[in-house]
Amino acid sequence: MRQTANRGIISPFPYAAEKFAAARRSLMLPHSAGEARSIAAAFHECLLGLKDIRSEDLDDNASMWVAKIQQMMDVTGIEDPLGVGTWEMKARQLSDADKIELRNSVDELAFWFDRQ
Image (tube, rainbow, N blue to C red; front, side):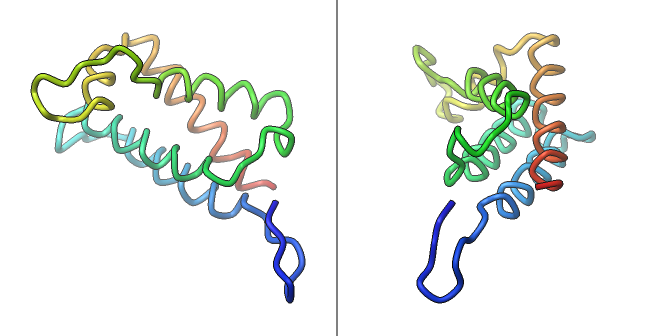
């Protein structure tokens, strides 16, 4: 958590809750720009939501959900011959089971951050 001189400790959780709520909305139907682009948008929101979160601020469940999301966001070895972005290319490669796991992890973290 960050600290400021005049206000004390500022929790990163409200921002994370906002970003994960946005990620959750990206994963909802309809996907007017296409499912892969919606998933890539959710990845972006997750990245923003996690930028100020330290692993020691999370409980075991939240840490597990973060790890699952980060694993799915990993674009190591992903090529982008279409020029759509590596996250969109990664999203195109996700199985239905992966998409369900992503949706569930994003949903759980959105609720978790909101409750903190």
